[in-house]
Image 1 (tube, rainbow, N blue to C red):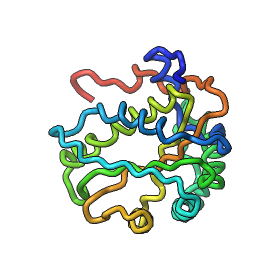
Image 2: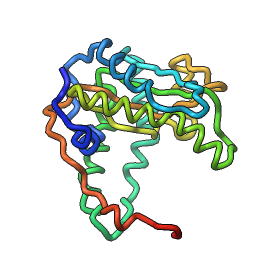
Image 3: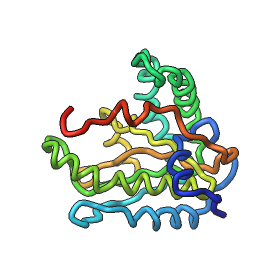
Image 4: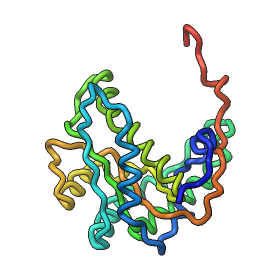
Length: 213
């Protein structure tokens, strides 16, 4: 089943979902593959399509990955929130509470996704870094949009990649660490309700430059 959303509604209501993930409802593999088939239409640098997609359903492996995630997430969540002096500050309490909830319950998500891209970008200049990540992240966002359109949600997390976390996760899942870089960790579940709204954001006029900074 797909939701009756316009393109604008889909783009403005696809959120990082944490507290409203339904941990008790199974996620069929065929739905994930359907979403991934859509995501694979995204552009890649030089049309290389060097991506691989690792889904994790095994409870023991999910728990092990969640422990790797928590090793970084727990101390990170104890850090003070940045203060910007604008509308973004109003959301920090809710964001922190939501992130803490996911940190405590991560392994309960029915499925994890770890998207991977061939190559290791360490030490690359800005151009190569942009090309590298630009060959994966559009597809990941397309996957999130496809999930949302089918009543599922996820959250884009990266804390398991810090320090030795990426290598430990690669070893756990058999990802060839020397040849593939992980782009994130996505807990996937159906959502409790589908009535997500646009987030509070600074208006485009405050972030736009014409011809000079």
